Length: 105
Image (cartoon, rainbow, N blue to C red):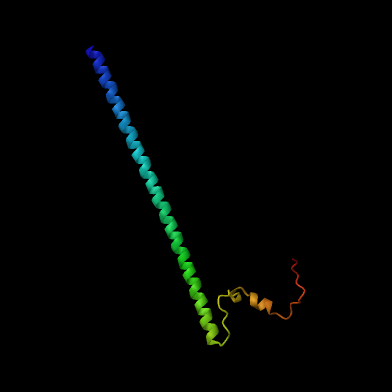
């Protein structure tokens, strides 16, 4: 009888150790997930800050172009994108281009 009680205590102790091991593994997995989420959140913040910097630079460029146009006495077109930086205005105003476009619609 004592031997049977000893075996049961031993089995119970092993079961408790297994339970503790699983809980520790679960904590490790959760911590890893937290690190991954934190890393993803940081990456999103970095990307958002980059977009904000690019938008700011674009607005500053627009302001400089408006100021340059005003200083040259050229009419300023409000809320219209400027295509001058792409060289498109020069093409549109080129008299050597015929009215018959090579592009088909």
